[in-house]
Image (cartoon, helix red, strand yellow):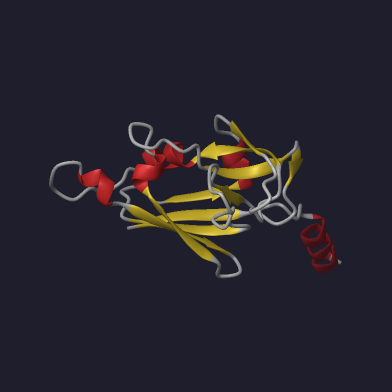
Length: 152
């Protein structure tokens, strides 16, 4: 009977529950869940539909990637502006991966409001946590069901 109850709970778990690990060149690796992301200060990003974009339009809510990286604390090399040598590979559960440079998201540089989103238009995602990169013309760097961010 106990096994049946545990199986029933597994099926009742929300489909949008996700886990993301931030690893690599960081001092404090992070393991994030949808719950830990929701507990942090939120940022909203609006994406309009564009004829040359595969990204769905909407208002995305999540946490700035820069905030999460500041919690993980990047391991910088020596030299002037060494932090600009960092890149991140963001990987989804299906193996789809994209790259971002720290200069794209650093507020003192390009400052894109890249977020790990857990909601769109006020509804939780059915397929995990999404990477949302505003300003990309084709939306190809939106990653669904993010599972790992490896800092290099």
